Image (cartoon, rainbow, N blue to C red):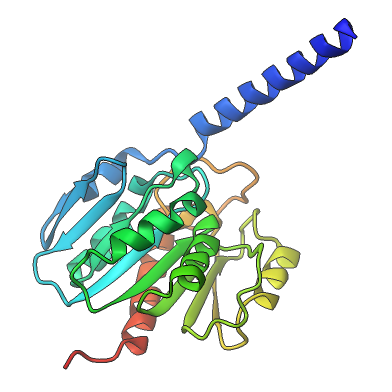
Length: 243
């Protein structure tokens, strides 16, 4: 029994070490990301819980919620947040406990209610897509449109009626054809799907490493830029003009 107990302790220790190493490597923002915390047309503030808010100089009265992928820090989405803040969106990027956005669903919904915006659009990357749809289903905020970037779907959201755009890279190692097909089956039939040629999973945000991903043939700047532009056009088409 002592040998079995010792073996179990060794296994647990090795698993903990592997998990710690994973947290240290995956999802770490690129050095360039912090440069987007300041710029013309907006100001950014990192809140006490690690969430980030981008406030536009000329607000359009809309809010954008960005739900981060598993283990990915909110700062990795700074390029996207800055892009939409320059368009007038008030951008909120919550930070989930253990760097899991699904753990931020309830607190993010409560925080959204305190912003002075008419309605929201939402971007969810990877786990963030599942988290975003869970938030919408559970709390029913005023959401006009959703963009899902490279999202597997562990639950069925096919009954949701909010307009959705789904982007995925053709080099995404975490979303192979069978997982992509499964995600499509769990989303409304009206979802617009768009492939990013040469894109992978990691290229939707500014972070340095993603285990099990494929190699992209385009740079992260190009992939994020493409995703931002396509998503902005989709949002604009879904939003009702302000009175």
